[in-house]
Amino acid sequence: MSCLSLVSAWGAERSAAEHEPVKTGLAKKKSQEARSLTSPTEEGQLSPWYFFLGLSNAYPKMGSESLVRNYYDGLMHKFSPTFDDVLTVGDIRDMGLLWVPYVGVGRTFGDKWSVFGQLGYSAGKVRTKADDKSYLILPMHTDFEIKRGAFYVGLGADYFPWGMPELKEYHGIMERLRAARPNIGGRATYVSATYRAKAKVGWKPFDNLVDMTISDEWVIPSVAPSIGLDVPLGPKSQLSFGASYSWFKEQEDDFNGPAFTIIWKRHFSAKKK
Image (cartoon, rainbow, N blue to C red; front, side, top):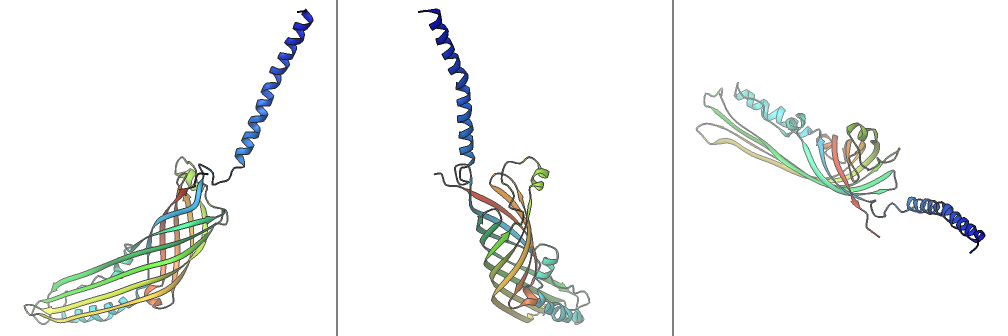
């Protein structure tokens, strides 16, 4: 083989080696571009569906309980100098202890809309028993109880003017707060509410002179505009803080009022294709 042939072969091999990295680089670039155009429902992405658990700190007016203050408490004070006003559900509300748990399922539409369904139930009673001195000489015994319950089911929607918070890995509270996004929305619900009050009054050692029970129940629709702030926690979950005001079609003096909520949301994983 001549020297000219050896030089030509060496030059061809060198030329191929120099161009091979360029081809590899172009292939990688095209591969990266293709991955950037994949659907958000591909593996590793989130489903638009989510579920949530919430707590609502409610402050309904409970105007009907004014009857307890105006009549029952007022009358008992006339019989006893040491009688203390009975405890009502309104007192529990004023202490910020009236919390309603609820659950729901929702779906996002794009980056700005979220719609959901929810239901919740709460019930409780407060009871006040006391023995007091009486102007009638004999010790006065009182036993007063109020029980309230409410089950509700409804639909709602939230709008995020600046988009929803990005769900990804975060480091620290401040980074999460900087990624938070506000929303405005509304809820429409049907509420099934129950009310029962029991009052007993007597003078020992005799039986109760008064033994009375009053009860009622309602099924009432309501609407509630709301504002909120969603704070991302990680790749799948977030916390939502909100405030709303409920208007009821009936019994407005009893049920209308504000509520403050905290909700934990978690998205489902997207189906693998």
